[in-house]
Every structure is written in structure tokens, then in C-alpha cells.
Length: 635
Image (cartoon, rainbow, N blue to C red; front, side, top):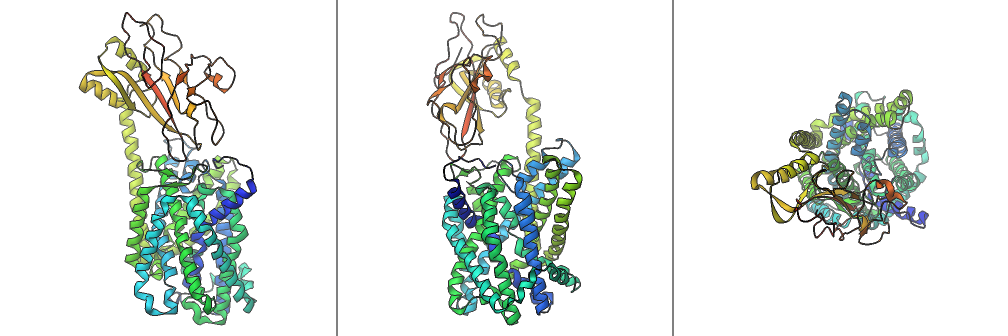
């Protein structure tokens, strides 16, 4: 479930989140009517534009939406969330967690998951380009005067979109939500307007028409599946954006508005083509009355910007998860919400993605050229997502092999069919997202393997903290005044920076602090709980007053539940002999210490764990009690 603070008025909160999700999640799949049906009946496929074929094409699109989006993603796969996060990297973490780290099957799962994530990045480059271009090209219908300015206008719209990302998903969704609502209402209205004139298209709900369409034209029936697939390309971005809003608002928006509006609009375009086959040049815009042309071009441009937003937000979530799993270098991650941990903005990937999208627009130049390349990468990602879902169902959710196989086997067949059809796009431009995906896969796999090799090397050279303290008191180095702080991620071992300092400088500071920064899965940590202090005394036997029971005491109050918690500011904590959740350390001597406020920005709080290496005591002075750690706790 999502990590969020429970507030009064849950129904109104769900309604607001649904509107926000509408403005971020459904832009991609919501703008598919701009080009999906047009590309399905493109002249290169050689399929006659008669009533039976139009009904067959509409039926294929309708059942693709029902099977892939409604059943597979919205109903099944959105159950698989990793602490509220969605997307293929979250699915990878769930699928691989049940297998031994050295097993071949785990290696296969990791390879598939990383390759699927890399393909999603390839799709993230194409989606903003094709979405905005297809909308701006509507200016050609009214007059050819705008034709030379289509590419510059597209670049300008994309620049404004990417510069707006720093405001955060909530602000973007609040701005785009009403626009997207108007867009889907307009889609539904145009569909009803044309369906009333030619209601025969309602027969397309019969799956028999879809089966005839994909079998009656020989080899071209198989090839045209690559164009039908354009109607569902936003489904993977829908799952990747789940961490921003949660699954409930996304499901409500899909079944209450998005799905009905899409079906009505596709059927309306089909009704128009039955009456006027010449409208195949651009059936989307011809489905509207002449007076509504330019208002719809403006609305479509805004909607395609939103379509780009769905993939961009998904790319942010994917990057963050890849960083956490060790597949990408550490980058700046800015949390833009105090309630939803999944709402993030990454400045570095934002700039890189913007540059790649602009290069794509300039290289392809038109939405038709991009449509020939579009779909291959996301089809591969969808197929891998289904395969990973099988392992999650079988070992994560505990379903039997039969049930897990049947539930995912049907979707694997459908995804494999669409993926095979999109392979014919490789020579027409499908190579482009494959190259982007291959580059990302190489980067992610290389970084992960490098981290593994580095960890092994550091582990071999690491020194246990207990051993280090024994050696420190047996053969003490020269102590210099001041406090040294060493960052470390491995508690219980000596930071390598400290060892290098001893080797090269032959000195140790009077006070030494090992600092570990831990990202908590809650929006904020109270002031009194932001610092945990572990005091490390001299080894047993070196001082008569050394307390028994290990290396000192751990001052800690566990964070329970979600959202802000109230604690007494500036103190940790009550003595361990009092009842409560802090009694878990009753066998240790907890110290009450003063701690300063820890600086932490964004939606994720940080807890600092500070083991303090003591200075060597002088024979004339017994160890003193710890004061404020800012002054240096010492013995």
C-alpha cells in the first residue's frame, strides 16, 4: 500500500487523487485515438476500407483495451506493488526476492527485468515526440501555412513541458487534470456524435469481427497488429505511475471515464470511415464539426503534453527504483510531496530525456514516421512484465503452478503476438528505441556488476569494528584534537577512509564519528528520532569501570506507522527500564542525550546513526558521561 497519512474525508481525497491521476497517468493512452486507427488502415497494409474490415479493426482495438489494459494491468498486475511503487523495476524486486542470490533462475529474472526496464526508457524517448507531433500536425488540416512551423512549435511545447517538471507531480496533475477531463469528455462527445449517425459500429463489440480481421488478410493481418497495438501503448506507463497516486484512484479513473471515452471515440471514428472513407487521412480531426477543429487542435496539443507526462513521470519512478536496487548511479532525487513517497523529480534524467526527445523530433520529423518505430520497445516491456508476474504469483502470492500458469499464460500469448508483429517495424525505425534500450541495458548491467565487484573487494579488505578497537587500545596511534566524521554504510566495520587516514597520516582524531544516513519509508521523522547514537567504549578489561554487555548503548525510538509523529523535541529517549516499545533495548544502558535538528528536505526523512569511537582515556581521569554529541561524546 501507499505510504500516506490518513486524513479525514477519505472520499474527497480519493476524488482529488483520481483527478490528479487523470492528468498524469492517462495522457499517453488517452491520446492514442489521434493516430491508432489511422495507422491501422494505412495504405501500406493494403487492407480494403470496407464496413467488415472497419468493424474488424474496431473490434480488435476494443478487445485489446479490455484484455491488456482492463484485465492484465488494472485488475491483475497493479496488485503487485513494492511498498506502493509500480513499474517493471518494482516487479523485478518482488519476483527476484524469492530466489537464492546465486541461482541461475534469479540471474535470468534479473536479466529479463533490467532489459524490460531498458526498453521502457526507449519508449520514454518516443512517446513525448510522437504525442506532441501528432497534435501539432492538426494545423495542416485547416491550412498549409503552418506546415513549416510544425517542428519548431513541437520543440517549444516540449521545452515548456520539461521545464515544468520541477514543480512536482501533484502540481502538474492539478494543472493537467481538468484539461485531461475536458479531453476525455470531448472524445466521448465526438464518438457519440458519429455513432448516432451510423450505429452499425456497435457490432464491433462482438469478438468474432476481431478474429476475422486478424485472419482474413493473410500475412498483412499479422503485420497490422503492430498498428492495433498503438491503442494500448500507454498501459505500461500506467503501471509505472502507480507510486504517484496509488492503485485505487487509477482504477476508478479507468473504468469510470477513460475506457468509455476511448471506446466511444474509436467507434465514432469507425462510423465516420464507413460513411466517408476519404476521412482516413486524419479520421480523428474529421470526426469533429468544422467549427470545433481549431479548439480541438488546441485541446489535443494540451492533451499530448499530458501524454508525455505519463511516460516522463514513469521514467522518474523507474530511475529512482533502479538507483535503490543498485542499477544506476546515485542521482539527485527530489521528493515533491510530503504524503506520497512515489512523487519524485530527478533533474539529471529530466535533462537527458529532454535532449533525447528533441533529437528524436528533429530526426524523424513527423508522427507517421515515428508511428512506424513506435510500439516495439513497449511491447517487449509488456511481455517481460507478464513473465515476471508469473514468478510473483507463484512464489510471492503463493498461488499454485496451475493457477499462476493459466492466469499469465493467456497474457503471454497475447503479448508475444503483439511483440512479434512489432518486430517488422525494425527496418522502418524500430531500431531506434532498441538502440536506446541496448545502451540503457549496458549502462545498468555494467553499473550493477561493477558495484558487486567493488563490494567484494571492499569486503575482503574490511576490518571488523571489534577487532579494530582491540588493536587501537593495544597499540594506540597519536591522537590529535578535533572531531573526524566518516560516512559509512556498513555498520560493524571500520570505514576505509579511516583506515587510509591511519596508514598515511599515522594519527587518529580525539573524537571519531561513524555516520550512516538511512532513508526511512515515511514522510518525516520527528526531531527526537532523527539521530541514533551508539557509544563505543574501550574494550573489556582495559578499564575497571567498563560496563558489561557489548560496545555501549544504542539510543533509538522505532518509527511505527506512517506520517508525521509527535515526540518531545530535542531528546532521545526515556530510560529503557520504562514500559513501551523502547523496552526492546532493556538489556542496555540507554543514555538521554541532546540532539540537534537534522536537516532533511523532501518527502523522505533521514535517520542518522552515529557510532562514536572513544578517545583513549588518561590514567588519571575516569571516563566521563556523554554530553551532547555535538560536543563529542568521549570516555
